Length: 222
Ligand SMILES: *Cc1c(COP(=O)(O)O)cnc(C)c1O
Image (cartoon, rainbow, N blue to C red; front, side, top):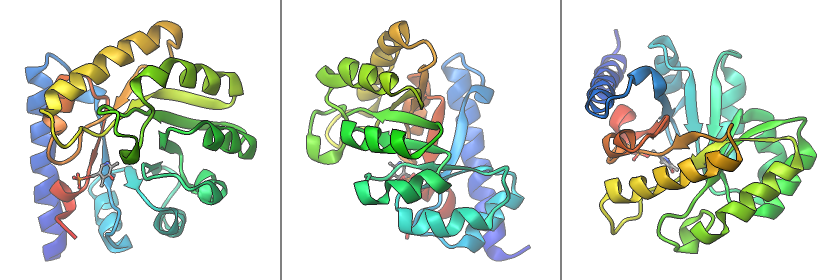
């Protein structure tokens, strides 16, 4: 086995056991939690290793990368776009991304809706109300979700968020969990939570994350 493969395999095993532990501590089953390996800035050869190790969910932040990498892998892979959306890239993103995690702008939603038969999406929520870091403001969530639901072909899987820099992640994710529960009352199919990265995924799992996005803890820092 190559050095790189054994390194990734060990990192992956460590992350998986931490997921198990965090799920157990929260009284949840690890089966409820999908691990997305964030492969941005890493080469196709690393994704091939992850594929051999059984990973099927991959996350990318840039259309320029995802559009080149995704077509090189079998159809059983699920590709997640989680970066900031640029309107002129939506057409390409819709081709390769199975799930768009970072929808926070109604004009993007309308454009995406016009380009696809249907598309899984998450609504990105701002947990600190600092609009420059992306995400819909808390106060706007209800009307934003309603507008997206009305488009008819964007399947809202749930909420996505990144923990603020200046707050205990568990507190921020608790807020996210509460908002998710409220959202589900009007949109029963939108109960998933995409939250948790290398430095805070255990906190996210304790607050109900169903999908965690892990890069550096598996692949290292680039
Ligand atoms: C890069 C990135 C991740 C993964 O971050 P790590 O800290 O490397 O695990 C997850 N989500 C988003 C939105 C990212 O940009």
